[in-house]
Length: 339
Image (cartoon, rainbow, N blue to C red; front, side, top):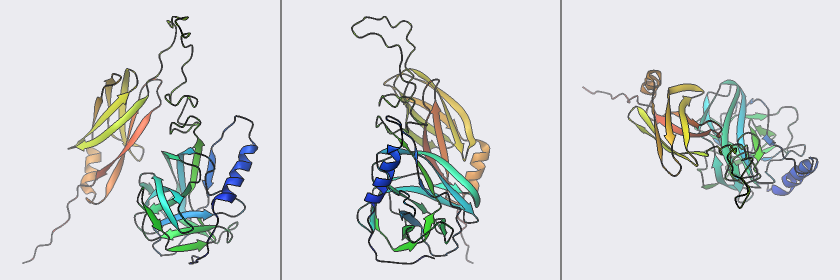
């Protein structure tokens, strides 16, 4: 059950001690992704509009806060009839026992009514960050009164989201509750904002996310470097904007690169791929012309709703980069005529 309480709590010490103990079990120099949250399947039926929830306590000594900086690379939600909503992952910094600052968030994603919804993302997080979720309607999917949950499983709740870089205070506190949310945080040894296990192929060089350079020339001209393979370009999507039925994408690269740009909605192509050749230091442009099925979907979608277009740029040997763009619906509201 959900309930309100005025009890204060200590957040960081237990979480930091637990994660530090886990890391001490790893070999020297080793690093591994850490899971936060719960694998539980949401069983919530409470109609209260908790559109924002953050997990502040877990039973059995499970960590709720990061003990070191890292990068969130994916998150997942398990539902059994509580989906059919739009949800975003929230990364928060506690300001007190009842107030929080939103320091990171994912884009809005569609949660299936029943099943597993998993999404990739890239959100750098500091030490001491905790996780929650926000929805646009209904309430955040959560689990309650299931085996393994105790009074130590606690959430703080609000009837509305805390905007990015903003802060807010809880409306209520819930016990024996776990948000149906699993978050994966990877280490980031070079601090470049890319997860070392799935997003960064060179975790020892902040300037490189592709394979680490090898066979570099000897300093001082001792090697000709003739047989050295070129360093893969580091790609960047600097902006994306809808112009009519075409998405204009601006690109950058650290070295000359032939880049392929694609656009998809929920994993399905939304436009034919486009290509561009980019010179270092210059702005490259690619244009994604939305497909007819995509335009038809937008025409049927109310203007206040949107589809999330995932734009990805990739080049041989380079780490792909992505960016999201909200495509607003184009269905016009009906006007009532009075005689």
